[in-house]
Every structure is written in structure tokens, then in C-alpha cells.
Length: 463
Image (cartoon, rainbow, N blue to C red; front, side):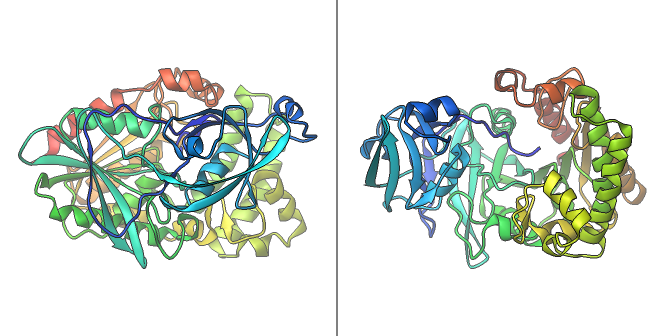
């Protein structure tokens, strides 16, 4: 999965229970607009005398926010920030995220059909808080700058076991996640049970400031980033360093065994991930996910058309992952140009599927079998029966089998019923597909057994 994205995104005020402790350092707090946003549809565009839908609709404005100080109101449309057009909530949030607290910014808006330029100084994004303990904002040097780490420490004195999160592949921020975000629910649940939680912003994301952005990082750059964050845990006296665990979800499950750490993690738990070379996974994914989707939704595919598409997929992925050709080179092939245009949002740049294309090519050469065979950690390999992203249970059994072949008794495989890639409670893959854009369902059907499984495994394996 990668992190849940809503069409409506709230950057509001969270009820403050315990104050956040911001460690003095190099990183400035990123800017905070303070609006609830929504996509602009044709009806809304017409109300503002626009022929075509563009910009972002302001649904509400948070008191005490940058938007309030700049005079923004509900039903305003935001068209641009410093002459850079924005046409979705995510685009606007990403654009504002480039600024730091105190920066002056000009925003182009429309109110009642009339364009208005608004200028103001941006306020800092409020820190995370927690009802279960202290929140510590820290930073770690990396790539010519610093990455932001956010640590949740449970109430009480002494040392606590810790859980270090490596999320999915995308470049979303893990700071002040929406209350419905599944990562937030998992991590809050683990803090409540008495575990320190460690989150790491990726390069150039949130407060992090680096020479390159997350999208420009390759796979091994990012593994180094997480390794640096993990190694920095040695300085905290409230962490029990003999009992630090890693939880890798999706792409995080690939990166977790590749990390180079100064002290060994006690355990590594992975969910919805891959161990095979990426060419094998992608060509299976190209066929099986289309079959699964076509059985649930009317995609206009039958088995023969799926196989025809799969033939093109094999040619593309072989040239891309095995021969290491860039997407721009492959795009020159007329047949594969049509395949890429149909299946991916590709603009001709070095960024492919949200990451630098070398990120995906390096996945082909990761030697994950070897990495898992050398891991001294306890391993928990989890597969959700309703997962249609990482849909192969054998993949996850194989992780445990490889570990146990070379480190007998160290790994456990658990098949989790009624759980999909996004940690939601669903009957099966079919319901996971049909509910994947149903935000009310997503909000109300988090499968909390993931918290119980992780906590029970940690208690079984800790020193």
C-alpha cells in the first residue's frame, strides 16, 4: 500500500494531551496552511465562472492558521502558489511543504468568480502530540542535510522496547498523520502498550532538508537513510537497546533486511512484501492483479486481452529491470510507448512511479535471499489473506523458510485472515478492491489485530 491518501485532507488542530518536545537543531519547522481541501469539480468551477475545473477548493479554514491570517475563507479556490499552478489537495500541500515557517508566500485565489492575490508569512505546522506519552522531534545528519525523526515515548520511567517503522515506497510525510491513517493507528496502539515508536521522514519530506528529494533517491540511498536513523537510537537512554524491533510494511519489508546497523535489531517484522527479484514479482503482478481486478470490476478485460497486455509487460520489465534501460529509452519503442502510456503516468523524466527509475532497477539486484539468510534477528513474516497488492502467500512463507534454513527457529510465518494490504478488516480480496476508495469504510474498519500480533511476538522474543 502505500500511505492512505484522501481527496479531502484536513490540516487542522489536534487535541493536545502531552506536549511535544522539540530538540534544538538545524531543521526549521515546515510551513502550515491550515485548510480543509477538496478537488474542484465541474459544478464548483461553474460557480466561479470557470469553463474548466482547476485549482483546489477551500472547504474550511482553521483558526490561528496561515490561511486565516491571509484572509482565505471557505469556498475560495486556490489556483497557484507563487505562480505555480496547483490542481489537487496533494499538489497544494506539497507546494506549501516546500516553505519553512516565516517564509513569505503569494497565493492566487478566486472568490465569487473574482481573482485575488493574497500575500502572507507562513506559520509553523503544529507538532504532533500523543495521549500516551511524550513526543520527541529530533534530527539525524544525512546527504548534506538532516532528516527528521519523530519518537513517541510511553509514560513512565526506565527503558522501553522500541519499534522502528519503515513504511511503503511513496514519499508521503509521516508527521501529523491523519487520525484515520493506518500507520498512526498501529503506532498509537503500540505506544499505548508500552513500546517506544520511531518514525523517520524520507529525504526532503516534511521538515527534512537534504541535497536531493525522496523522489530522486535510489533504493540504497534510502536504505542508508533508514540505517542512519536507526543507528541514532543509541543515544536515547529510555530505549532498551537489546530490544529494538523493525517493522517494514510493503517496500519497507524489502528495505528492512538490507539495513546496515551499528547494533543488531532484536527482530524484524514484515507485512505485504517481496523476497524475489523484482522482475519476477512485477511480471506476476502484471498478470495476476489484472485477473483479480477483472473478476471484481468491469475493466473491459478477458483472459486473452490480459495475456496480450502481459506480453508487452514482460518485454517492458525485461528491458527496464534486467537490461537496465531507462524509461526514456524504452519510450522510444512504439509498442512499448503505447504500453507505458496506458499503464503509467510517465512524463519522460527520470522519475518513474514516483521514484527515480534506478530505485526500481536496484530492486532487481538486492539479493534478498542472501540478506535474510544473514540476519541474526528474530523474523515475523505476515501475509494478509485479502491482500491483492502483495497477493502471494508463498512469498511470505519463503521469507520465514529462508531465515529458518540458516538460523533455525528464528522465523515465524503468520497468515492473517480478513486483512488487506492497508491493514483493513475485509471479508476477502474482492471487498478490499471494492472498498479501496470508500473513505467511510476505511475510517471504520481498521483491523487492530495487527497491533496484537506485533505485541505478542515482541513479548515472545524480547530479551
